[in-house]
Image (cartoon, rainbow, N blue to C red; front, side, top):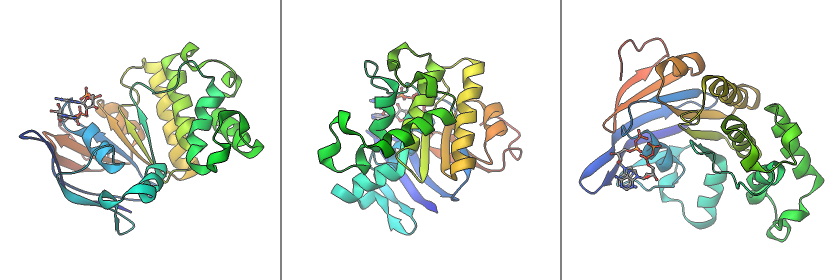
Length: 236
Ligand code: ADP
Ligand code: ADP
């Protein structure tokens, strides 16, 4: 269980996230919706510690992750993988190598030279790609793929981290409707088949309703709605 308690992040005088309290059930698929600037991205970045809160706590199974340092912080970041609107693959490397990057935190450092991956790591990376119909692209350069394909590679990379939580920051914002569906289906697969909690920032309420089992509405950094996908009637 992830428990967020009165979380605030200020930038200058403005609160990007303002007193947010939430409970995220393990295995749930939670959509965070709200307009641009509502604080969605900051909330996800606070959870995996790409940003630090001004005040408040984030408890994971009772432990305050906002205080983690060093090795414990690296472990936490492995346990909550993140994907981004712009995919963040290494374009000039092949797809397989990009996915293997997700294994880096699991291998002893002497093996992290990229050519020395174990058969197990390679098999896991290929299986992840195949889960999202991307197996045939394993040997291709990442920057030759379409946006939707790149995002599915990024999801495979996140999956081989063996996370408990996947944080998805506007994962479909730059995709056309068909690729949007393919990427959201991949996130649904991550959630259902692997039991990974998914926390996904979305602009579209329709999409959130179609895929999420719980919705959080943010406006000006505050939670203005929390409930089932069809409990929300008006725009956030
Ligand atoms: P959303 O993801 O909902 O679009 P963000 O979390 O990106 O919202 O931003 C919330 C508010 O915080 C915005 O006003 C944004 O400009 C501000 N903000 C976010 N990150 C920073 C930062 N690193 N420095 C200053 N302001 C920031
Ligand atoms: P998105 O709309 O996809 O959430 P943003 O454009 O708000 O992303 O932010 C992109 C990056 O710029 C993030 O790292 C965010 O923290 C940073 N950022 C956002 N707003 C500001 C700001 N006003 N000043 C400085 N950095 C910002």
